[in-house]
Image 1 (cartoon, rainbow, N blue to C red):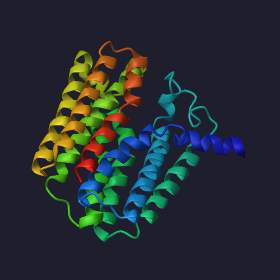
Image 2 (tube, rainbow, N blue to C red):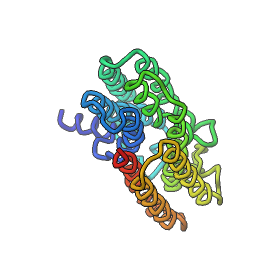
Image 3 (cartoon, one colour):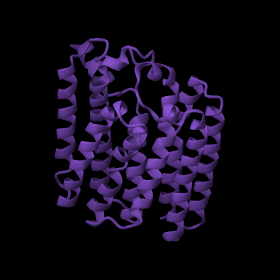
Length: 282
């Protein structure tokens, strides 16, 4: 029984919190702005736990969708589902239970937020399958990871202001950047399997496009800071995020898989810097 629970925890990447953090930071950006820097504890708790639940459900769905591919990829061949320690139906049950818990969690929130959770779940389900037909599935991941932004504004203010979409654009660009670096790790295996990823689509322009995406994210935040008239501290942390993007470039420029993976894992710092830029502005 203990071994089975260990496999379930491995299925949802419980020991790899980077995915949850990459969903959480954009949600906190929005939550802090929507509440003018003073979010209610209930809202904070719901969105933090909700990000963990939905990211975990997404991992289970992803492994279900990729179970026949993962066995041929060095990095993923020992995942519990593809290794046969968990059956496909078990992965679907885990994903369903986690998604249900996430919906129960947002029950105290308004109707607008509940309605937004429906397309959020739909995109989370669709994303793993887009690797079969869409050239840049990382963009779909960015959309999935961005739903916390409009949901946070809806929960706090019962509306989504126009400038909230600047955050969405920034987050989609950021997601394409870090997940392309992640895809660069498995590029050779993915080419053999016929899987579509941005790392394959961009080809020799992969590093250039990643830098461009970081530039879009930073420029979007600069526009947001100007629009909301944030103080100098905002620009200091934005400068820190810019320096981090330079650091990530230095890691990925030679396309070494271990360095690309390290860059992906350290993108948490980028999201945190942007959150601090917002939080200290209030």
